[in-house]
Image 1 (cartoon, rainbow, N blue to C red):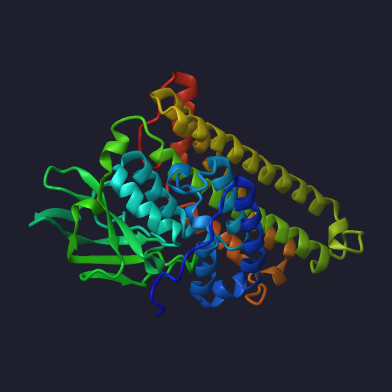
Image 2: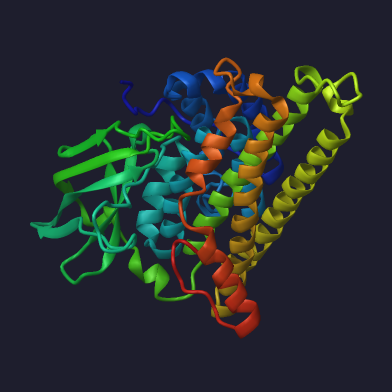
Length: 400
């Protein structure tokens, strides 16, 4: 297994336009072997090195600290562009950006300078947040205990997307007062074990396995307040959800474009359809039309949600953060449905040949089905309805 080492200094991106251009160029490369990586579960070490060394992993770093500080609209588009080419590659940096948002909101000036400098040099951050066996998905048992001048961390994490590839693993821990904090733990520190045991039938190369923390030493400057980001109006929760929506929207776009290509070039019409080519079949044309509308709608809502998040980041009040959360919940709901529909229609319109492993077209549906399980859409519809019908602000949570 490759070691997550840092090679040299990453390129520096200076504008939103540059970020989008580079993302588009990388997506063209990443798409070429995406089906093979998925089929054989070939971990994307070289692709991730290109990705992080391109400067894209540092585009949310504030301008005052040397970053591009791109808009949330641009960040969502970057993730969507990459996810359209490879859903796993689109998801891997999600928690990296999430950790940097926590750092922006809750980190000290010294912590921000240290960690942002690492990211500007090309460092990748993973995550160790979720746990199995707790009463609710938000409960944590991983402990942060005082030890001399610092702390020790003990616990076990699951669904640690990106940890396998990371130089640091931001880890949610609970201190002696019961407060959650985020410890930015170096991947190679003694006592850290990353286990490649992710076996999902979709998003197969995200590295979303387990992390075991056995008496891991952590310094005080590596621990950032976490729970307080949800005790006041901040954009930490909706920020995370915007990136998830971008992943699903990208998968929907990739499946839709592949459906167009496959139907035009390889799909065959039914003998009684009265047409020579599948792309002339009126029912197929109608299905493509419906799919085009849903994908375009998801992309429009994604941009609208990004604009709402930008506004909330500039002026985080109870109302602006709630408006951003609802706008993002709306695109999360639609992008979930669009990605599943697009992946399903790609196989349906392509016929039996589209299900052959050699084509790898089923990966879009599998990726969408697995990623959209991240948090339940039915609760997003509830929050949206309660907001518009009863003027109820949504709870401040990482899933809204």
